[in-house]
Length: 191
Image (cartoon, rainbow, N blue to C red; front, side, top):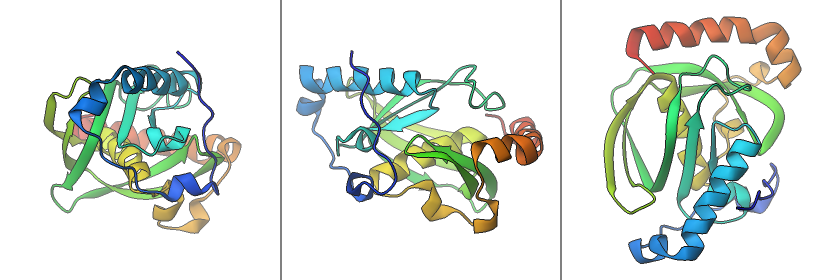
């Protein structure tokens, strides 16, 4: 496995739409090795997720996992999940405020409004169909990663630019209140 370089905000690749891939391409040794690299890179950077486009591969694949993540100690666990050609459908009108950051936008966080209930259709890394509903904070993580595959970065969705802050200032002034908000959402709707 190889740890890949992560594209930073301003690089044109982050504004491209990822192309969908076929099951045959997905099954190839090259793409399966790439998925291993994507996961390894996400783990190395302590990310909650990483999209292929963030590591200079404009294909519709993203990975997510949250398990005792030091960057997000308040986030509920997400088992290792690989989505291929994902499509998200918003279910309902309820949204929540999510203080987001991104490995492609280092040291910056900001408030983004995310749907609290979504339906996700995709394939897993073996090409098996996924059709599931996701709620709560975890739904925000899914939306963030799929946004990358559409050429969007979280700063495009920041609802109030005055919420933008560095990681240090987030920890100092906002993390405790946000962590309490996360606990409240998890208690009410799960993950």
